[in-house]
Amino acid sequence: MHEAGLAARIVEIAEAKARQHEAVAVRSVRLRLGEFTGVVREALDFAFEALKRNTLLENAVLEVESVPLTGSCPDCLWVGAPQQDFCLVCPQCGTPVEILTGREMAVESIEIEEPSYVR
Image (cartoon, rainbow, N blue to C red; front, side, top):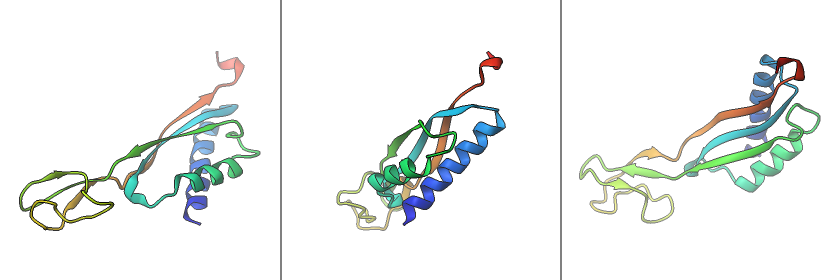
């Protein structure tokens, strides 16, 4: 399952960064996720909930910013969202479009809880 591997990597990245900053917990992880990645959000949430147990992310919330699929036509210069789900052909001239957004998959930020002696 693709989403389980992705969730495991998110937990790994967040926990490593939290440990680097001597955090006692991770409160939230913000992820940018493009519509064209093929990730099933419900499966990702399920895997994240299961994999965060017994880690610094035990009580963390996964916040996902969905990035829409957009493309541009190299011939007629049309830019926009596909007219049909994931149709990568220009709706104006029929030329294959170049994907501009929608393939993103990145941990954007991690909110951590610092130890009380840091404050």
